[in-house]
Image (cartoon, rainbow, N blue to C red):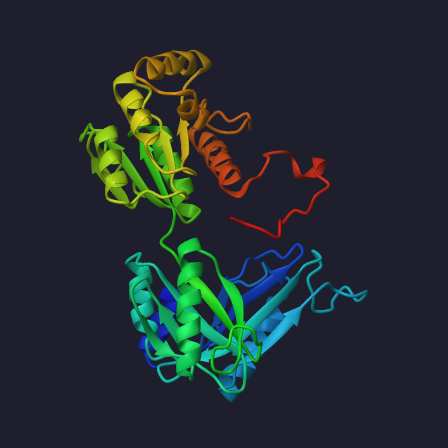
Length: 372
C-alpha cells in the first residue's frame, strides 16, 4: 500500500471516492505479499497491483462494485482450473483480497496516515475485514492510537497486538471476539505495518556508488551516499539518493548507530577503495546491530590487504564473518550498472535467506511462505 498511498491520499483530499484492494493473506506461490495494494480511481484509472497480473481484471471489476455500493467486500483467488481463462492464479498460489471504498467519510484520518508514512514515522493500520458488529480503521503508533474499530474492547486488544506486529515490521490477519476476546474469531482484523523503509548506506562517491544508489532506491530503500570529499558528494552525481552526506564515513556511521537509526534491515556498502576511508568505516560497521548487511568492494588482493589491516586494528573473527567481500554475487558483471545488480542481488539474498542459485536448479517453492 505504501506505493499507492500518495495518489490515494491526493484523491481523498480532493473529496473523491476511491476503490482500494489490499492483499490480506497469501499461501503457496502467491506473487505478492500481504499489504500489496491496488487502487481504482473515480475516472477508471488503476494504480498498483495485487497479483502481478493474474487476477487484476477481476479485482478491478470488484472495486467498481464496491465504489458504487459503498460496501466493502472480500474475495479469495486460487489456482486456475482447466479453463485457461478462468480467474485464478496460474502460479499455484492463493490470495485473499479485501476491497473497500475510501473517502473522507469512510476513512477520516487517511491524510494523517499518508503524511506520517511520507515522514517515515512507524505506524500500523488495522482494518476490520470481517465481522458484522465492528467496522472502521484503527491507526497505531509506538506511542498511541487513533480511530476506532467500533468497539472499545476490540480497539484495546488490537492496539496491543498491532504494536507487536509493527515492532517486527509484519502485516497479518488477527482474529477476536466481537469485543476483543483473543480466543474467539467473530471479527477478522488486518494489520498493515508501515515500518520505515530499510536503509542503504553507500560510502564512496564513485560511479559504482551512483549505480548502487539508483538500484537501491528502485527496490524501496532509503538511500544515503556519504563521502568526506564535498567536490564528489553532490546531488548532480547522485540524483537517486535520498540523502547526500559530506562527512568521514566512520564518524557518520557511528553517529547514526548511536542515534538508533541503524537496524537489522540496514545495508552498508563500502565502495571507497581507500584504506584510510574503508578500514575505519568497516570497524564502525562491525559495531552496528546484528543482521546489518556489510559489504566492501575490491579485488582479491585488496580484500586480503583489507583483512590484514582490520585485524591489526582489532577486528575479531566474528566481525570479519559479517563482511561480504568482495561484494556482490558472481553475475559476470562489468559495467557499474551490472555491478550494482550483483550487489543488490546479494543484499536481497542476505535479507531474505536466498541462496543465489539459479531457480532452474531448485526444487523448492519460488515464493517461500516465510519472508523476513
